[in-house]
Image (cartoon, rainbow, N blue to C red):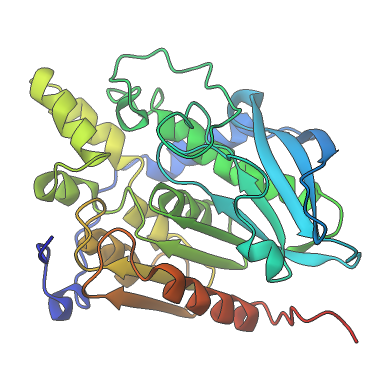
Length: 335
């Protein structure tokens, strides 16, 4: 796919007007207040994985409306001191899968929580284990359009709330340094991590690659690739629903979350990405932390000849080096 968005020089200066509703802060304050419960953990059970160097637990925590949300929690085997933790969010249509699938962060020495996506897990990967009992509002079958006509009903109100609660959950688990928590994700996961950065004021770090839900209105004009294509397909049938849909999506806008963030941030983007157009990531990066009263360290890495895969393993290595430095973490075991 040829480059189709703005040239890099323009992306580096791109600061779109905020397309956020007047009640954005109130909406999320009230949503998270409703979800807050004194006991976030429901169950924590060790699991056998066949891996000798990693210990894993099957975790259930209370998310949106107190609903049970599943996650895998892993630590390097035999390490007992509190560790900084990476909370990772999975991509669109994917569930938490199997506990041995994602080992990069735990092999780098971190505690690692991989959150399941409620009501997802059936499009690719190895499945999920978290139901979405509230997915009854009008909308299409895909998560991007579930409850599209009201921000109170939309799937991402629930999923973003789960993502915030996952940070609370990991802080309640043993062997975690609660002051050093990073939110990490690619695509949908990157959008969730970015939302967490805007909603959790004491997050220690954000790593977001090809984040979904950034510059939503522009993305709908640029691409018909899913998940944005699911929204345009819905609106092509439900003519006249645009106003309600745009209002809902404005409450989920990643650039709005970015403006409110505090944590040091590391972004990655492929300039030929037709799934999550690069102008969305740059819009979030260039407006990052502008409302928070802070000036955190931030950097973005562009891959001119890559699409949604971005920098792939090259970018992951950059993330590993950056996070060690930001968290002042030496992953080497003591001699």
